[in-house]
Length: 483
Image (tube, rainbow, N blue to C red; front, top):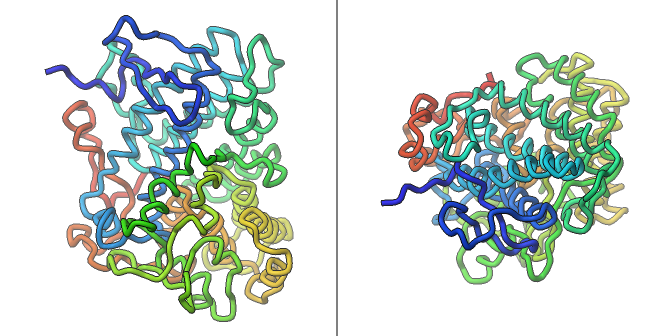
């Protein structure tokens, strides 16, 4: 039987310049197939794959964060933390994406195309970040060498984090170079070939991954993040996102919303998320983003599913919601997230803690700006935005700002983004910061009443690469940055 070489073999070159085609080539199998593609053909495919990886990762990790919950079928095992092995995430990142991104970077370097190479390094950082924040230690330094090494070693997470920052630093330097020869234009589905916007995105990513390290030293991590943000986004127009259309569907529409029209229900809003917005967790504070996030039909209130219960709520993640329309953007990095990184970092850099009150004007202003940016993004009316911002539970002044205020807004702004689970773990599922946070009902007894901290590796990876056996850890064991 022919051995299946998925993760670490030769580049799986993508044939189509359109984002709808994902046909993969094994260049060892058929000499009549092309063994190379142009950068302009490869780039849109790896961009689409990266956006889809954010969807694939979020569709499970947002269950763990308490943003989503599962109906009785579908991903209920993940919602109940039963033998979580996110094979789809691992294989999508390694098989469908990283091999091609590595090829893109090498080919761009060979052709002396610094803009393509810089974009490729940003995409490498994004996908490595997704993988390591789900699994911990992952293959990198020995991976992507083709037949030279089909069973690469696993790099420690701290080394992956160092590599992410190196890749982003190198990407910024490359993108700052004058275009030499070919450069991306319309085939850049994120930014239309704008090197300036890619540089801003790289800087926000640098800040994101710096802030992940708050348990390794909160003030140092916060100050490093603030330094990176000086070169970050300037408005919602800089958001790193992929906008879909009526031929290439948004994956939340394709995989979730369509099912709501046929009775094939999989995931929807959690009770924790909606109670934090409908006035239950915060009496007197009703969030005007609710109708843009959830569709309650003719029901009087927004009611989500209790995590792990499998019992239906009355809201749907369907095509009437901002995130799950056919042509909605899939947002990977946003200006709203940047401002909340800034707010949290300024709060921590000023000596703020989980229980402290009061911070700087900079932290408070960034917090307010983030709320406004996210409301503008999803389409909240100006009058509704002003009413929310004037609510005493939001308009608290810098002297009364707490970490809970910042994280409440970040949890909403990061809806359907894998980053939400990172924040929840960094603050240990703290119910005083994330109101309503609780273990899922019917949780797997093997979890011992503890929260999930990671995914285990795919079973097929255990059979392909003997190096993974030493890396297998319980679902409750914290990742390196979480310790």
